[in-house]
Each structure stands twice: as C-alpha cells, then as structure tokens.
Length: 470
Image 1 (tube, rainbow, N blue to C red):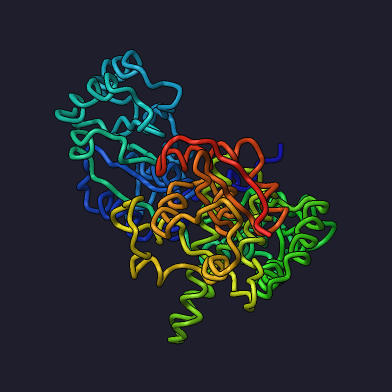
Image 2 (cartoon, one colour):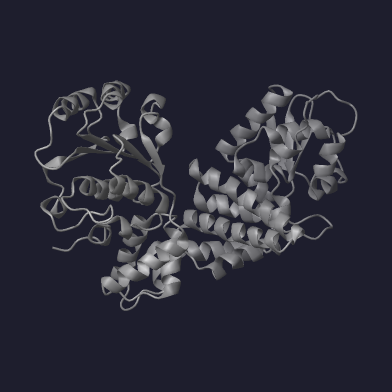
C-alpha cells in the first residue's frame, strides 16, 4: 500500500532529524549519559519534528543496546513502539477522566523496557481540570515514568506544568535545509525535481518540512515529467516573482488601468489572490533587506512603506474583505493621480491613516493644522484645499479631518477618503470625492455606514451626504 512521503521518510534516528541540532543534542546526551528527565516539553510550529523526536526518544530510552545514544534499530523495542509507549492525542482526549485513567496505569511498571513512556500530542488542548490532575503526577513521578509532551502553543500551558518540564524549543526549518532534504527524498522516491522547484517549495512551506513533502507529492502528481518551477506555481495557484514584480511596477508608475487589467487576467487564470498578496509581501521584504544591506536608505524606506501598506491589506483580507476588491483598492490608492503633480511611488502613498492624527483633537480649534500634521499631509490634500469651495459649504479644519480619517479602520473606506474633502453644511456633513469611482465606493452601504460612524464620533451625530467635488 502506498504511504505518503512524510510517513515513509519520517526519521528513525536522531541523526536523521533535520535542522534541530540543539534538541537532538540534549536528548541524545541524556540517553548516552543515562541522565533522563521525567518530562520533556517539545514546542514549535507545525512540521518541525516534535512527534518524530518524541518517538525516537521513546525507542532510545528502552532500547536493549543503544549505540552512542541512538536506538539500535534491530531489537524488539526498536522494531515498533511496543507496549512501553502510549500515544495520546490531547485534542480528542482532553478531559479529566482520561488523565485519571493515565494516573492509574502509570503506577505499574512497563511490561518491557525500563520506562513507561507517555507521548501527549497537542498537550495545550487539555482542560484546566485535566492539567490539575496531571500536575500531581509531574510533581512526584514514579521512577519508571517518562512524559514527552508536544505542543504548538506553549503559552497556553499553566506555569506550574512548564516549570516541571525540560523545555526544548524547535525552530522553523531554514529554506536551505528544507531544499536539501527535498532533493534527498526526491532521489530516494525516484521523483525528478530541479533545484529551482525545490527551493520554491521550501519557501512556500514556511518552515514546515511536512508541508514541503506534501507539496512535493502534490507537484509530482501534477507533473507529466520532472517537477519544475512552473509545475509548483500551477499546482499552488501562485505566480512567479517576475509577474508579481510587474504589478508592483504598474502601481509605482501610476498605471491603474494596466494594473486592474492585469489583476482581472490573473483571476481568470485561477490565481489565488490571497496568496498573491503574501508573495508580494515576501518579495518587497527581501528587497527592503537588500536595500538596507547596501545602505540604500531611500530605496529601503520606500520598500518599507510599500510593505506596510501590503501588510494592512493582508490584515483586511484576513478579516474577510473580498480579495479582488482589496487589491483593486490598493492599486488605485498606490497609483492615485495627483492634480498638477506626478504620481508618487506606491510606498509613498501608503502611510498609515492614524499617523497624521494629532495627539489631542480639538474640533473647535481655529488655528491652522499642527506642524506635525502639515508635514505629514499628502500632496493630494494640499491640492484639494486650493480648489474652489462649493457654495454653502465650509471646509473643516485639518485637525478634524485628520481625526475623522484616523477613526476609519477599513481599507476600502480609508482608500476612498484619502482622496476626499470633508465639508460642514450646517445641518449635515458632506464628503466630496474627486472621481466617480471613489464616490461609488463610498456609497456602498457597508462603507457608507463606517464613514457615518467615524463622523459621529468626532463631530456629532448629523446626516452625512456624499457627492463629487468638481
């Protein structure tokens, strides 16, 4: 029967574990020197080898003839977990009754080997009552008992449990280590894969070797021949770095139409737009690091601001915003045309809206804007202030405008309002936009309600009207 790659190539010895030298050294030395603690806590992200290390340790401590701290691999204990090891999934066995049952069985010596080993996976899922029942066993454990706890969220464990375990933090795997292991596994499994494809898989696995092996398996099933970079992109619904850079370039040059057409084309191809934003953040982050390393401060600052705007977009998408709408607004905001001025690069137009909010807001202030607010005001706001004021309307002062914008947290509403002017019409507020598309965005019911609530908080509850500033 066929077995998945991550199961077929699970490490059986400490020497086979990839990229966790510290944890391996601690466990192997404990077996070699016969100084084994009663409880170890293995913590780290998914796919970093927590359960694999626990199983190797369970075999090593009960091995009949260990070799330099490694299980021999030939004795009955090493041939299988045997009756000396009990694996418990705390996600489905999380109650006090299961821990009470464990305490009853822990009193007895194992039928074979030196230790009765309990491997508790996802231990953070235990209830508070279950932790209290386990705590007594950790305080005064029988000499033949060994706990190997594994978790991805150690902060959820009680401090009383943490203090009674020897904690080993497993770090995410480096891209180079994952790439090397993928090439080794591909050779053993008779899968043809080139180095560029292996590196791309390693990058997308985000430090998880198990995820990398699963993605390699997916790409091998997708490819007709060798697994290449194009195969990985097609299997994951992602885009190549060159294509993503073309979008960033269109935004920087102010080519809104080209950027929107490019985005529509990618959506028709079935590209994962959520993944597009994540990959764009990775590219810009690498550019920023390279610029700082080369002491190109202006380029680094521009990349930083672009990365900041993409991170805000990513946060909005995580909260449920439509992916295509969010990216369209980002393109429009990054490449918004100025009145009488050339468009800024996208990074320069993505300062956080709250950055221009003054420390103390006084809506009745008659003086001009504070120096900090005027320094941070975009060029488009200065050009709008010079435009003719509609009859019967009074422009609000800069402080109130900044406070209003600071209360808007939604990317869609904020993108539209950064190209608008707020007026006081006496009995109502009026928000005037430069272009019909921005006005249409503000008139969406959900967006309009957010704008009303922001105005009510800073200027009092009055009707809000929307219109064009021509």
